[in-house]
Image (cartoon, rainbow, N blue to C red):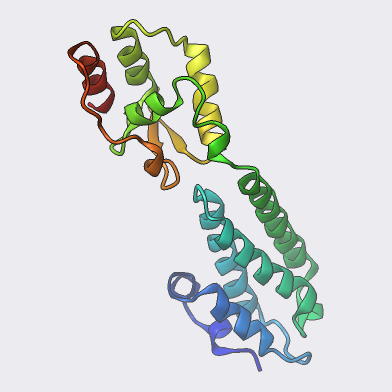
Length: 207
């Protein structure tokens, strides 16, 4: 008999309160004779849809992606009642697995150490700061101190920082809102006493 988790009347509540391990345990409890009534199938499909979307949106959650991959793979390949899953759902769940695999490969390739010592990178991280900034504000901060950073070079550096999980960019109107990720925050250098000639630039960066 299918676990009560799959027969819950509100799949939203399951997605909000259950864990990946809860769903995996429920799948493991299924027997080969357990079918997939539409209600139960829809609960699992909804939960997977929400969790996969949430996991792929997080900037640096390699463990969460791997955990979800194990769940989807079990549903497709190891659950005793997997033969009862309709082909349309199997195709969609395979798509979920492929999305997670692409995300996993992206996260594995991230290594902030490869970019932190490049010119302007630490200054950019400080400029973005914990409160966030905009691409235009960063450009103006550098210009005001006579530091040349073209829009093309800035865009390249921001793409690099985003690819290595140090920042996120979010389009707000005509601006790109820049935010440090959890992985990026520790690399912002603590404020150091600055000489009068440098203090103005330092203040501008952290403003």
